[in-house]
Length: 410
Length: 230
Ligand SMILES: Nc1ncnc2c1ncn2[C@@H]1O[C@H](COP(=O)(O)OP(=O)(O)OP(=O)(O)O)[C@@H](O)[C@H]1O
Ligand SMILES: [Mg+2]
Image (cartoon, rainbow over all chains, first blue to last red; front, side):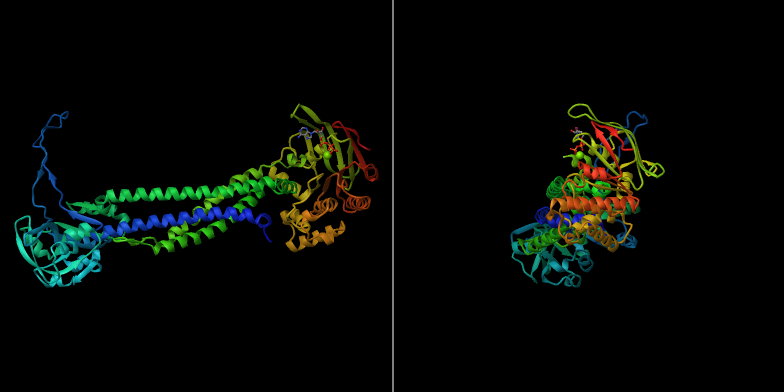
């Protein structure tokens, strides 16, 4: 054995196998639970995200309602306005020259994908029943590239929409309520009083009830007609960036380039994300507490080892081992116990994750959204080591302060 | 003797204990120990022999006065420096506590040398075997220290004190647990180390025979030196 301190540490551990294992078991459980709970938290977060990105882009660009400016400005600096009556000015909410705008947006290096969309309020009629919903006029192929709509088609083909001028793709909720099926005609009217008979070329189910019960896709031209607008009318541009976590920053950049409102998904979904974050922080706090408490096993067992080995420590110091050597010996013992525990904990956590992956929670979640993520593993290992290092250091420091003379006198 | 090199010098060592009452254990202790000298320290139980030895060994720093080892004042040095000094220059044989029980005798003997890192592991092992052989313990080398008799343990701790060939070997009743045969062996070893290897032995003993045969005897009474034996 080359390293004398390590040799001593190992001897202590080997001659006290039971305590070593108990301490390691504590860390095992702590690290395992930490790994598992954080994987679960991450899994749910990414599930929430994927749910959001199913229906929403990272960035939406639209014309915000303007508030009227004061009718008269005051010359007196003390009173700002003399007459004020702010109101929403009702202009058209169209984006000007949308195709040029779309091109410019696509030129930005961080934009991976951008599409135009024409929104309108839709009413689906069959016989005497009517359902209220909303329609989107889109280039279906580009739209599917962005939202992966293809994946959710349960009947018909996406590509049939651009081919048929009077085609429509509806959510399965609408189809069920009005007992419609592929190929049938559906009478759709808009809030502008336009009514059209459209042919169902596809039905989708996203698992999101709001979407499935309300939404339909039509060609852009159809939507423009529903909105009583000409072919330059576009209500929204959707864009995705290469990094959803930076979208808020990219949105600001885009906003500087154009006179429109640029909103990123973290604002649109701030309520859901806040809830998500709160849950995540809670899980993290709980799992860290478990790990922390588990590390007390190491602290306890090292403290008692040091009490029992106080003679050894005195002898070592007498024959020339420094306080530092003593710290190293006991910190190493702690780390070795921690190492065994961390290895076991990673295995334990992995087994829990594996089991959870095979638990079915029901639609729309499906199987538990928990994954093996390298970052979470690395984080658990590092945290495990930090915690055991602390748990080992404090008793070791105490050991280093042992005064050999007072021990020899006993 | 006077012409020989001074290896250890104590100047006016005084020490107090405050618990339970203020009490002076060591009073103006001054003496010199020379290279190659086999010195014994005697005195009644409680006269302060062990206390003095702890001060000399650098483990106890709570005293006034000055201790000079090998020309260097060690009073006031930092604990790391003292530990290194103990490791390289002082061998210590304790009165009661001897060995690390979970380690083999061989490993116990090797520890100070492994700490010193002057020789390779193999060389240290060889030296440790030689030391053990000198004390008639070769057969016990691989036994855990806890499985040895008291006398055997004491001899192993003597072997350990020798391993780094320290300038000074301090012993607190090194023969307290030994029969007369082994006492003689230890005595001969010490004599040889002092006279042939030029190492200095400072040994506390209750054995008057042992003291008489040594080069010089210092006698303590109530914390004072009453005879320097010169
Ligand atoms: N920690 C302490 N606190 C108070 N008094 C102490 C302490 N340690 C030792 N003493 C006292 O100091 C005196 C000297 O003790 P020391 O151990 O040096 O004696 P000694 O000469 O080695 O005796 P022995 O031959 O029995 O080993 C004794 O009277 C003892 O009671
Ligand atoms: Mg004593």
